[in-house]
Length: 247
Image (cartoon, rainbow, N blue to C red; front, side, top):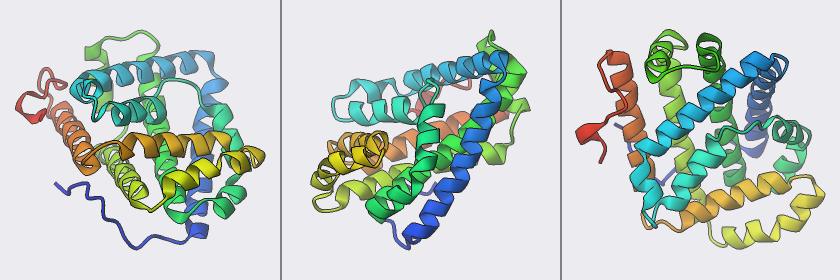
């Protein structure tokens, strides 16, 4: 497996990154708008995300308990895969992409792009699951729907986005004085309607900055999620029980 090294090169320029953000935001907003206009689908989608968030909390319980990795694990669960409706945040982001491109360094902008790309694909997959499951379902129902909806390629891409985002955060914490830069951006970001985005970056930075080996954390999360994916598609029982693959 390709490891989540903290070294990354060949960044696209800020204009190209902003174009990716616009494209992925359009996808996210479209999916969430369809859900908002259908109360039953909206409720089912929230139920799916709640189930998945709890499953991930169970899978990575040790990372959530350990003082060294707890902030990063909480950031991944709450900021990247929480169950709340983020449609208002997305609409705000759409309006301020030009300001983001102007104010943020390329590495920070790349981190945002990766987070939104993950969000866009997760929305697509979650909507498919929600249409199949409804608001009430069992773990067995969920497993059957997982195999039935979406494609394995999409599921692998989803974990790939998690890995790439983790790498982007690894690189973000290596930039000299980036913590001070993000703190200094609070006022200008608020004036430019970028307060939520600036806060997201600062939370991600702080959660990764406190770890001795952030790359190892990313490796662990990705390895476990890929093991679960394999088990789900293999059709065996207890696919969420990792056994010897948990470490």
